[in-house]
Amino acid sequence: MAARKAPAKDKLIAAAVKVVREKGFNATSVDELCAEAGVTKGAFFHHFPTKVDLGIAAADAWKVHANDLFGSAPYMDHEDPFDRLLGYLEFRRDMLDGPVAEFTCLVGTMVQESYDTLPALRAACHASIWGHALTLVDDIEAARERHGVTGDWTAESLALHTQAVLQGAFILAKADNGGGAARDTANHLIRYVRMLFNLPPVPME
Amino acid sequence: MAARKAPAKDKLIAAAVKVVREKGFNATSVDELCAEAGVTKGAFFHHFPTKVDLGIAAADAWKVHANDLFGSAPYMDHEDPFDRLLGYLEFRRDMLDGPVAEFTCLVGTMVQESYDTLPALRAACHASIWGHALTLVDDIEAARERHGVTGDWTAESLALHTQAVLQGAFILAKADNGGGAARDTANHLIRYVRMLFNLPPVPME
DNA sequence: AATAACATACCGACTGGTCGGTATGATGTC
DNA sequence: GACATCATACCGACCAGTCGGTATGTTATT
Image (cartoon, rainbow over all chains, first blue to last red):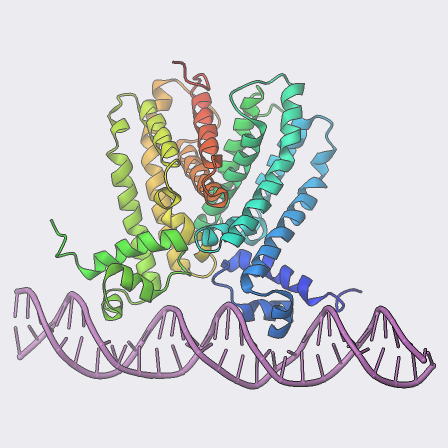
């Protein structure tokens, strides 16, 4: 087992992803991160010059995690790129029924707190969000061609729009404390994408 | 004009709205809020038992501010409720071209940081967001009737969806540091609403 | 004179970060 | 294979400063 052998650096990144997602970057102390990771403060500052640097590393890890998770999900087997896009959106919508701590976005949370004060962290969050969003572009473009869809919008802007709606859904979910507002908004997004591709807004059974 | 007579309480709320919006709730210290308000710490804790209580007061004030601002905007003169709805969305989209600090949402920022740790603040943010979003419901329902629009969605869910997209746009704007991603996403929202109401997605000149 | 509205000085807990030190293992030399 | 050398990973006590909050005033209003 690599349980004990896991290096402090990796354990700290995992701890940051978990705790910062729940409490935010500023509200999470270095001591808390060390405790969660089962690591001493000395180890922390051996691997990361500052707390912000751990935040940046966590943002990078987050992108990799997201692209792994959604890149290997079952709906990716669909042959039609539009079905893959829709599968992605429905998968994300269904995640919203679970506990808040399991679907919210680390980097969306962090960038809210850091955009004006910690430029390096802001840049890392930007790279993380865009790096995930842009994985959708190829399928959107392929779907557009396949289904002969035109319109006054770019694949990139639609990819980013999906992320914006999801980020907004997370905020509603956090405010709503388990209500259904987040799911409703994801369904509006799905309805929009279906309409863009000339499908009936509600799937027929 | 209550300029000079402005009591410490009001100045503190105004300071909280301004500074918390830029730096987040946790990153803003009580001393900083006092300095911004031109008020001493004694005055702070005379009016607010804790820092969280000022946050709650700021969330309440924010809702009032938003409803005033958007309730008295020029597009509200339109006779057709759908035009009022569209006017609202275009107005909000156009705000996204200004500086980030002028269009972002205080309560959207605060709820991200507080949902898990400060339940009272979370509840105040919920009331603020919902309290503004629901001002759209009457116009949405009236527009629906007037234009004979049906569909598998409620006015309330669409009102909340607009807020979710805007919140998501703010996150993109913060991450993007002045890029156009936020505006693009607002345009997707407008396109969606037009499609829901059977209008051509791009307005004709 | 009583009360609300402010001001000043201060407190202990906690913050991010430092620093001298150790344990372990790889590398080179003979 | 023995030994010196070096680098990496990690430890935990410690520091100066900041935090939210309190205690004890002083001043304005009624």
